[in-house]
Length: 276
Image (cartoon, rainbow, N blue to C red; front, side, top):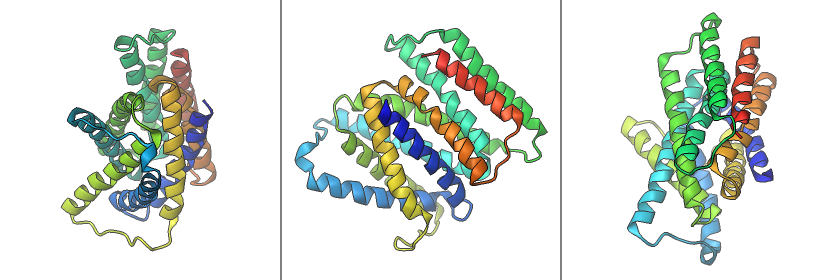
């Protein structure tokens, strides 16, 4: 459990850094540079301790692990584009919405039965709808594309989280974490080349250099926590990340949180906790 809490703390810092950095750079530029740094660090660890890691040996295993990482990479890309177009308010509520899909999958497929399933789902849905309804009072209208990207982000992260849970039953945390970052680099790099966007200088000093170790710790701690629990428990404990993100957004980014943001998020969190 402590790994999940540590992961949530570092992801909260990472979320604020993302929002801060993409204000000055194109999203894919940030993703590619950050994943280059984390892949380099992770690759060095794998080379030095290669004998300690289990590598997939069959084609089906390789396909499943790679598909998991590709879906996770797409989720990250959708997330960064959404953060550039909207506020952390929207990101927080969509992140919490993902617990519905995870809980439903574990309920019907893995027979991991949450308590108060129906009531919890209704509270989450009601809180989320209340947030969207009250957004009509916001002077800064969020574009449809931002909601689309946030929805796709939530779907990709929920699916990849469940798939990664299965992978962790066989493979080491470090191997999967490095694999994920390499896939992020490949997927984002291909899209970036297709769009003909320039690559940021690898040696230029910027906040992306600070982001790399923060996200590395967050990913590894989160995977250790996921390995010792399950995707739903992981998503519930990760509720602390949106709350910390909200606090940091107010302090660092000076974002304004209306009372209905807090009340709707409270309903969503309450519903998610009722599923545990």
